[in-house]
Length: 308
Image (tube, rainbow, N blue to C red):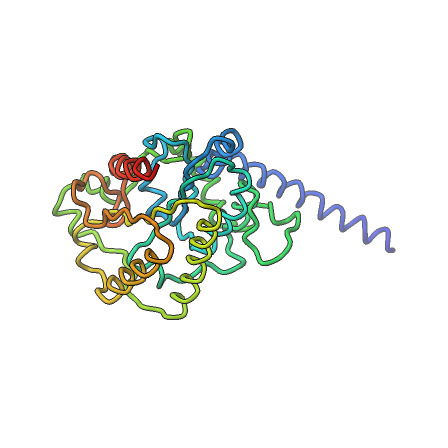
């Protein structure tokens, strides 16, 4: 009876395992930005001097091909300071020539909800970069990408294999395609763009601020001890976004930056007012496209060169 039961279980489990193995293979074979970045990291880790961290604003604003120093951009959508610190502290031993770290500070950065310790992107950090962003030991299942977010990866599989949508990444993993952005869809027409709704976080949260500030200080302290220079990037936003910001949050952010700068002596690259940028340089109201990234990265390049 037991043998018969085991046989039935195997008949059920084997197809399931085979199907999942196929899905996991398809997921890992997708050419996404993390896969390209991982390849670049493995090939160039001994040469990398500049590490860019942060959320989607830094991800879209910094294209390493416009930096004179060898650089890698590990910024990602909704990435918080806790994750930034995990990437920095765990990858720095692989980067013997690291001299400069670029971190973000949008007006709402400190008041944004931190990622949970079981954040679904943790598996991507672990699989592609070997970074453990959990507060625990890792297991084999932690490298199974598809299980981390089945709905997201199902959509990615459909887009990549069925719809044949292939983003144009450069060797650094920067996506150069702009066709799908909100401003591109509006053909960069000012009236149409003015009517595009804002996505803006204008809500203060003292608890989030406390947690984010703690992890930001970890980054600053780590870099101070390792003699790594810090550049805090304030990336461009449109005038509509600029005027819609909560003034209390802006003032608090600026005050905190001023206080921290006196203690840690970092450099601030402030381009929030978007002087020198056109609507054609934005993907939406608070993210640059590849054209804007070229301008911003060239400004960052000048700052980094002046630090030498």
